Every structure is written in structure tokens, then in C-alpha cells.
Image 1 (cartoon, rainbow, N blue to C red):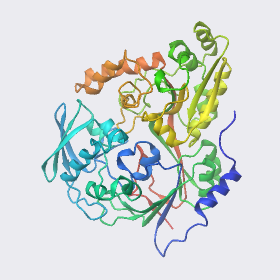
Image 2 (image 1 turned 45 degrees about the horizontal axis):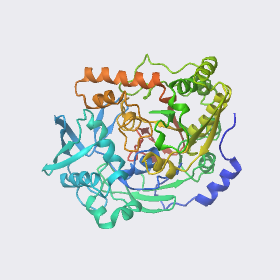
Image 3 (image 1 turned 90 degrees about the horizontal axis):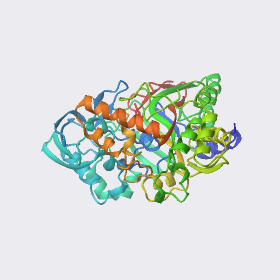
Image 4 (image 1 turned 180 degrees about the vertical axis):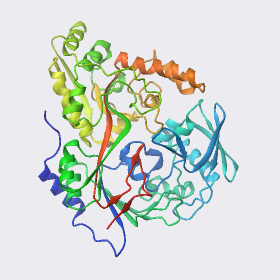
Amino acid sequence: MKKLIASAGAAVIAATVAFGAAPVAQAQEKVLRVAHFGFNPQKGRFEMAFGAQSTLPLMAFADSMTFLNKDGSVDPGLATSWEAKDQSTWVFKIREGVKFHNGAPMTADQVVKNVEFLISDEAGKTSISSRFLGLASAKKIDERTVEITTTTPNPILDRWFALFRIMDADYQKDVGIEGFTIKPIGTGPFKVTSWSGETMEAEKFADAWRPAKIDRLRIDSLTEVAARVSALQSGQVDIAWVLSPDDIPRLDASGHKVNITQIFDVVSFKFNTIPERTTADNTPILDRRVRRAINFAINRDQYVKEVLGGLTVAAGQSGASTVAGHQKDIKPYPYDPAQAKKLLAEAGFGGGLNLIMELIPTSTDYTNTSQFIADNLRQVGINLELRQIALADLLGKLRGQKPWDGHMWMGLVESFPTGDVMRPFATDSCSFFGAFICDKSIQPTIDAANSEFDKSKRAELVRKVVQHYHDEALISYMYERSVIDGLSPKVKNYKLFNRAINWHEIDLEG
């Protein structure tokens, strides 16, 4: 199987150019250096941060209203308690004594201003947060209490609020969106001092309500996996994010630590089922038999065992086995190339079929997986062209600002931030503002599940949705994602969960 990653030699050169010589810290100062797989083009904008590209660095300087725990419970963040007043109204108590990086107090007024910005014309469609959160309005009850209303009933708004990070809205208004992009002000343990090109630098915020143990933080973007590994092994960085299973033996042998985290997300490829949203003729994949044939043609178990080292399991639905609402009896499609060929023939494509898959090359989760899929599909007569695109292009396509140019695209089915099996349908359905997939027959059930406060009734609706997407093969779920991060032996207390890192607890020893 071919691997679409750069050579180690090129990676060493890239790392040297990016970092230069390893920086010398001031006496007794702890400087944490991180190799990132690529910043979101919008850098520090709170309202644009959804994918791991943006949330991993952002949570160093931003705090959300709630945090989701590994056991699925919701923990207090900038909100200390909350309750649903009715199906469209929630009341949140705000943490006392919290300051922004510029010394301004974080109050109920600031929460109200954040909501007003997210629903404003200025934020508009570019505000991923506002679209997902469904915010309608916010009202200050007192200095520590805010009443928030939603456009539709949302029984798990407290879980969604792990996505709602509070910025200094007054500062943002003064410097403008572009100014805030490179010098954001939040309440997190670190304060950004500069963000130039592909390097972010920050310093410890002494007045943080969760103060850091590290004095300074530097994050550099190195898009190639091999470059991140080289930077870690040469001592230029202390942490290298999102590595490959192939890197584990090398890091173990060199005395580095490997942190493997099972996360909510499912690596998948999604079909573009809305004709006007793609420049490709998507007639073939509108046929259920073709989509099911593609699923039967892929040997997921082989990929998990041989390429991923058995670090995870194959997937067959919209949430990993750890998320709320996961249906244990809905299994991945079995590997059955004979059935795949039979279905293709019935659909009129027994003589072969040409398809296009788009993907970003930031992770081997995408590059290696897509190559494996292409190899498998070739065995049943499907020629799959792989087209690599930039992250900025992917975001433009997802927001509906650019057309797709393929029949499908490789990405994640994301249960972030709610840890709930229904979360992915906020994007993977007709209701998404940049919709690329739409099955009108199941949409009313999706809408009902997302607004049902009765837990048993909601569970029945959730099951119908998950089963439908599996049976109709609207998305090809591949495997539950595990994230591999490389750490220097000096790094202590590193944890990753729900696209957030425990920045305030990380320490460096020696």
C-alpha cells in the first residue's frame, strides 16, 4: 500500500527551517514547545474554532462555559451551574473572580455580549459556533446570572456549551475581527503575545483562575508528520501532535513517550448527495446500491490490524463506542467484495466506475486511509481518484462558500463537543447551513431527536436515525479514531480529551 507522506529527509529540512536551532530559555524559565499539524486560517477567533486544528491551541488561552468529562458528565467551566427553565430557555450561573488577559472582569455582561456577537450580521454564516449552538438571545439577570434562549428546543445545551468560549467582547469590538485573530483575549492559562505566520507564542497569565505551571508556550505549524517527529527527536519541541502508528517504535526506542487517546470521532468518508453542491456528476452515488457496494468493498478490520496496529476498532455508525447513544448492535459493514460487485452490476456499473474523493493531507488518518480505500475499491472495479486540497478550501466547501469537486470527501464524523451520537447530524444532514448530504426522509426524525427532552423518547428517535444512516450507507464509517501524540520525557501531566488539552496542568521536569 502506498503512503502519501513526505520523506524523512525532507521532513528534517522542514523542521530545521521552521524552528532553527533549539531556543535557549531564560534561567529557570519553563518553555513548552509544540509542533502542530496546521493552524486554522482564522487563528485565534473563538467563534471559528471547531476542528482540532483550532481547538488544541485555542484552549490554551480560551475557556468554555462547560467542559465535558471522559466519563461523559458535564463539568463546570466559566459557568458553575445551569438549569433548563423551559425547552428554549436556560439559566447559567457565572464563575466569580475570573479575569480576562487584559485585567477586565469576566461578567454576565460579557456573556451577553458574546451571544450578541455570535448572532449578529457581523459574525453571520462564518460563525460556526452560533450555527451549532442555535442561540437566539441572552439577558443579564444579575452580575453572575445569565438567561439564554435558543431558536429551537435543545435538551443538551449544557453539553454544547463546551463549544462556547468567552472572549473579551469589548476588546474585540475595539480591535476588530482581524485584530482579534492574531492577538485574542480570553480567560485561559496563557496569554498570546504574538501570532505571526505559522508560529504562536504565549506567556503564563498570572491571574488565571486555572494558572499554568509553564512560563511560556510556543506552537509551530509543521504539516508533515515526519517533520513533527524529527523536531521532537532532535529536541526542538517537547510535544508533537497527531503522529502515525509507524512512529511509535521509533519514539519508544529514542526514549520519548507516546500518548494514545481514544476520542469520540470516527474517521469516515462522506458522500456529496446534493447535486448542486458539487461540480462532479454525483448520479452514481445517489444510488443506494452503489453506496452499499462501496461499504462492502472495504476491509476495515484489515486496515485496523495491519496499518493502525490494532490501536482501535472498525466503526459502523456516527459515534465511537464511548459516546452517549452508541448502538452496540449496529455493526460495521462486513468485507464482502462479491456482494459489492453484485450491487454494482445491479446498479448498472458492472463494467466499472470512476469516482473522486477530496481530502486534506494533514494527517495519516486521511492520506493512508484514503489510499487503502482506493486500493480496495479497485478490486471491485471502482477507480477512485484522490485529490488533496488545502484546509482553507475544505472549510470553504463546508461553509457552502465553494463547491465540492468530488463525489465524496475524507474527514471525521465528529461527536465534539457533546460526546453524543446525534452531534454529527448537526453537519451531516439537511439542517447544516453548508449542507452537502441530505436525506429528507429521515430529517424530521433528526429534528425530533434534537428537540426531545424526554430521555426515553429521545433514545428511540436516536436509534432510528443511527440505523437509517447505516442502512442507507449515506456515510462510510471507517474506524474509531485514536490520536497519537509524541512527548519529550520532560513533559508531565499531559492529557487530551474532547479536543481540549489540560494546559494548566502540564509541567516540564528538569
